[in-house]
Image (tube, rainbow, N blue to C red; front, side, top):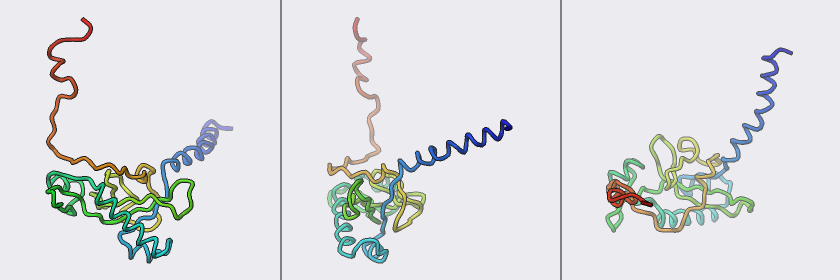
Length: 178
């Protein structure tokens, strides 16, 4: 057998391992712009669509990324930002994602609010890209994007930042262990 033929066989033999490695980081999710699109898709019941949308809205109000300046919000999420009564800016919720909990029935979901990001993609509050374009219905997404959102208050994002790092002043005074 020729050397090139052996190489082709070796490459073909490793293909299943390479392809299976890709699916380990991907997960199926349901993505919808609103309740109406969820209902019209027919994958889950009307009442579940409404319930999960309301849960996504509550998550959005608690965990949306917050910005001190409109320009900072718009840099990440375009012109779909809104100002809160506190003066902070958050992106407008433009959709929601339902990811089935691993090892559970299809009725238990991680619900994540979605925002329009640059480049024509839905994005999570952590700016993880969801699906391709503004695709709705069943989509394949990175597992990282379907992680259960933290219920802690989000930090306020600001462009003002002090440089220097930990110990920047004491480093100028002397060294350790002398």
